[in-house]
Amino acid sequence: MKERLEALRIEALDKLQSVADAAALNDLRVHYLGKKGQLTEILRGMGALSAEERPVIGQVGNEVRAAIEAVIAEKQEAFDRAATAHRLQAETIDVTLPGKSVSVGAVHPLNKVVQEIEDIFIGMGYTVAEGPEVETDFFNFEALNLPKNHPARDMQDSFYITDEILLRTQTSPVQIRTMKAMNGKTPVKVICPGKVYRRDDDDATHSFMFHQIEGLVIGPNIRMSDLKGTLLQFVQEMYGSQMQIRLRPSFFPFTEPSAEVDVTCAQCGGSGCRMCKHTGWIEILGCGMVHPKVLEYGGYDPKEVTGFAFGMGVERIALLKYGIDDIRHFYANDTRFLNQFAKM
Ligand code: DAH
Image 1 (cartoon, rainbow, N blue to C red):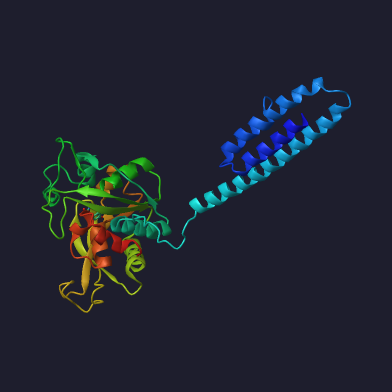
Image 2 (cartoon, rainbow, N blue to C red; image 1 turned 135 degrees about the vertical axis):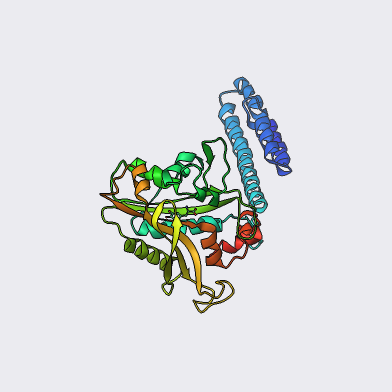
C-alpha cells in the first residue's frame, strides 16, 4: 500500500507539473483528492491492515495528500495571478488618446435674449406671465379696445381659425388675462414673453411667427414718468449705461397717450450711420398709458388706478444686440449660426 501511495504521489505531481489551466487543475484535484478520488480509493484498504501498520500507512497517506495539496495551491495561485494580469492588460485605457467629442446644444439666441430681458425685469420686481398662442378675438382685439372693423386691425393681418378664434397677433392679450386673474388687486407688474403670428411675407425683417415681450404695470398713481424711467433702466441694462432713449408720440388703440421708443444707435453711438438711417436712433418698442377702456375690460376702475404698458419684438432686440442682418437666421436651425452664441 505504501508503494501505491508513493506511486500516486509521483503520478499526481507529474501531472500537476504540466497542468494547463485552472479548470484542468480542478479536475486533477477531484481526480486525486476528491471524495471518490484515487487517494481515498487506496486508503479504503486500510481496514485490512494490522494495528501496527495502520498508523504508518495513515501517516504516509497524510504526507501524500499534503504534498499534492501544496502543489495544487501553488498552481492555483499562479493561475490567479496570470488571470489578474490578463484582465489588467485587457482593460488598460490609454488616457493619452483623444476623447470622442460629444456635441452639446446651446440656448437659442432668441431664448437667451428673452431670459436676459426677463432677468432685468425680475430685478425690478416683475413676475413673468404667459398666455395661449391660440387666442380668442375678444382677448386679442376686442378687450384691447379694437372692436370689430376697427381700422387698426389691419395693422396686424391675422391667421383666423374660426370667426372668433385666431393665432394671437401680439402678446397684449396676456395683459387682459393677467388683469382678470388679479381680480382687481394691485400692484400688477408683469412681463409676458411669447410667440405671435401674422400673415406677413417672410423677408429679412418679417416673419409669419416672431416673439414679443409685453409689459404691464397697474397701481394707484402710475405715471408716464414711471414708464420712461423703467424703459431707460431696461435699455441701459440691456445695451449699456451710455444708452439713451427718446419717446415719440404714436398711436395704439390700447394706450393713451401712446409712444414709440427709440434707443441710441449702437452702431454709431448716435452720430448717424446707415443702420439708423442717419438719425442716431433705432426704434425698439411701443408703449403708453393703459387706455381706460382696457382697464375696465380687465376689471379695474380707471378712476382709481392707472397703468402703463409696453411691447417689444424679441427678434428686433436680438438683431440689434448681436448685429445680425436677417431675421431668418433665427429660424433656419443652421448650427454654424447658432454655435456662435453658445459661449456668449
Ligand atoms: N402690441 C403692439 C404690437 O404688436 C406693441 C405694443 C405697443 C404693446 C404699445 C403695448 C403697448 O403694450 O403699450 O405692435
